[in-house]
Image (cartoon, rainbow, N blue to C red; front, side, top):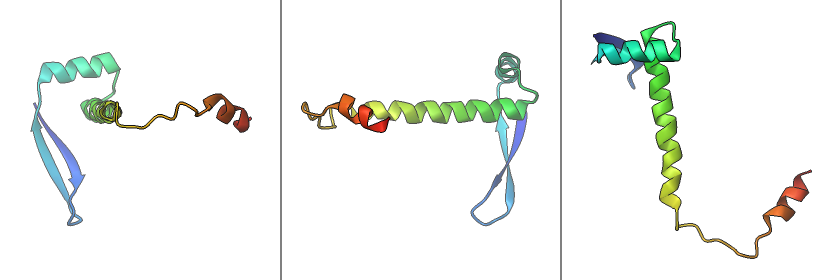
Amino acid sequence: MALTHWRVSPYGSNLPTNLKLDDKLIEATVKLGNFKSKQEAVNTALAEFVSRRQRLRILDLAGKIAFDPKWDYKKMRRGRS
């Protein structure tokens, strides 16, 4: 399946992006997500992929942030209410 997606170029005009995607995978995504269109399925899948990868980046911080053992998070929470 060839899918055309329009994107805005840095030059201000819309350019089509042609992708060859696995038809079975697209149909399974549409069905599983109960999407109304293939475009909706692909855009949602890409957004979820980006979101997940961004969340995983926090694991890169493990062991790199200094922890203050005297910090009282409960005191901070009491100050919010």
